[in-house]
Length: 288
Image 1 (cartoon, rainbow, N blue to C red):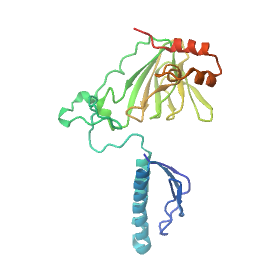
Image 2: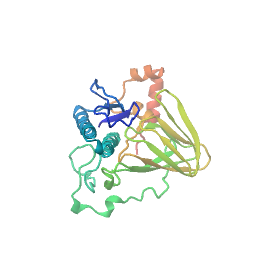
Image 3: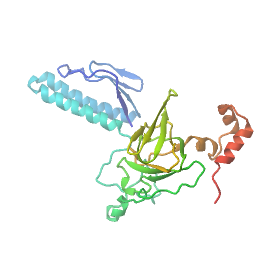
Image 4: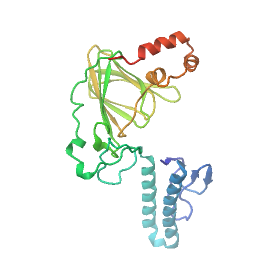
């Protein structure tokens, strides 16, 4: 996926033939005046991006050669640039047909899921009632996450959205974790929560949120929610990915398979092997 960020001013410069963009692709800078963009991605993606930019530049040449068409050329140029940037910044791949209901039983691995045959699509592929019920919290951290993603709703495949419900026991915690593929926005259904996330500069952004209020956790940043009351609480979460993924910090480090070497953990946390073993024992999945 091509990533684009604007790093300079966007000037009304369509009267000049080479004033549209400056691209930096694979370490090579292509200078020109006008708006500046930083582009990253695979070689093929950058080439496609550059091709679209060249199309926009062609319209700028039209404006130079045929002054009466300057206004139309400018509009087309900006529309092309907008379309390129919008597609480049999308997190999940864009859909190329009306429906692509996930065929979760297919053995083929792709970036997402292959499509079920249209003749086999039913309303059940787009329905899920799992968020209507309060989850039964029965674990040591005091929270339960019920996901409503493409694995539960096959019709979400290629649509780039999903949801979940989180229920908290009194003083319950949704431990520090990340969603590597999505930004999360929570809406408080009941209760009061202390929530927060950590930036890469180690700054904590936190707030207490109540019923009816919203809080956003940026994509990929470590975040948490804790019920600060003596009553149960619950939230609805929304994601801009059909499958946002979740990495719990503690579980990832101390219960992985194969295990993270003890000498890595003791060095990272500046504790002894005995403490590492205690943590692993407490976090180990309970046998049914």
